[in-house]
Length: 112
Image 1 (cartoon, rainbow, N blue to C red):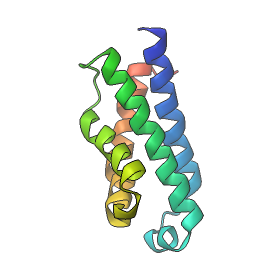
Image 2: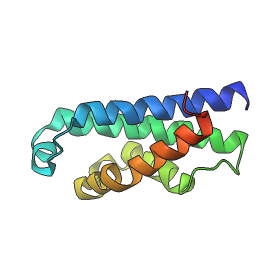
Image 3: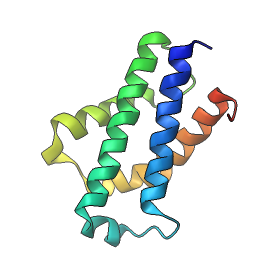
């Protein structure tokens, strides 16, 4: 695997780990809504995930990450449509999509 690809995968892994650290074990949507700094931190990590995914796609369009285009589109929404970010959608991504993405990235990295 190319060095650049491994770097971007590692960046995604770090951002996922950061999101999980920010949220902790006891995940509560209401607490998420009430803490602007938490929402902004999660959104920033999603931006990094989206940008790294975009760069990965430029190197390998067939990278084994499902919904890679959707990940990039989310990044664009968070950055350019900041006033249209829906906390319910972000929470759904955190709950459903991030765990799947973590598994895929871990598989690609070979669980380093």
